[in-house]
Image: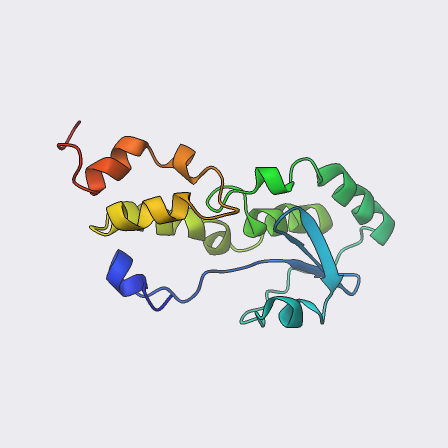
Length: 161
């Protein structure tokens, strides 16, 4: 977030990781659906929670939630992860909807696509987008960002070409 003003021209409060804490465990998506005791995530990943949103109370039994998680393994697999359109925030939103009928705040689920839009409008897009495309665990960024747009931002193609 320290580089955001130079790259997209504005401050960014944070780039959010989301998980769902229920039944004493945190469930999250990254390399597949994962689960840790709710007090283990910060130590394991070096990220302490900066914001907690109370999404309500679930009446879904733990066993039913575990069955739902099993059913979601194909949808939320390591291969399906996409930094922009299918990330931990999207998993947390779907899990929250299953457990409570409520979504997580939209500014969290839309953050990656909003930042990408701002980046595309930035003169830094040509330098930054190729880096994003080459990052491990970020498949699909190229499919969301047309190659012509990257080349155009980099000044390799004439406008409209």
